[in-house]
Length: 106
Ligand code: SF4
Ligand code: SF4
Image (cartoon, rainbow, N blue to C red; front, top):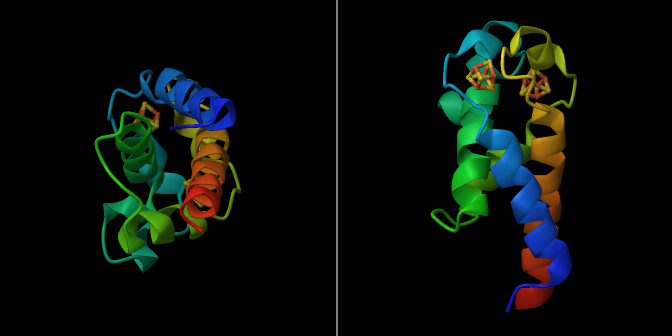
């Protein structure tokens, strides 16, 4: 059973990521995108992975964890997002969900 804290994080992530139009404008400014093996190392990919996690449609695979923890939290992507999504907030919340999931399974 999920704790209230985890459910609050999921609700926040769902609300923020529902504003994503998958336009990709954010990707041009991301310093990590082209250093990773796939687009999960950029903001659009992180938003999409977080959305899937919050909906229960994906789990914390090593790729998802790497995607979230390779974000520099620099907020460069915020400058180009027409949806005004708090991408760093989404990444932080997804990291928190991951930590909670580890505590539950320990
Ligand atoms: S905050 Fe993360 S996703 Fe956004 S530009 Fe910086 S490294 Fe990329
Ligand atoms: S710029 Fe904003 S709306 Fe467009 S893909 Fe990136 S996070 Fe989604």
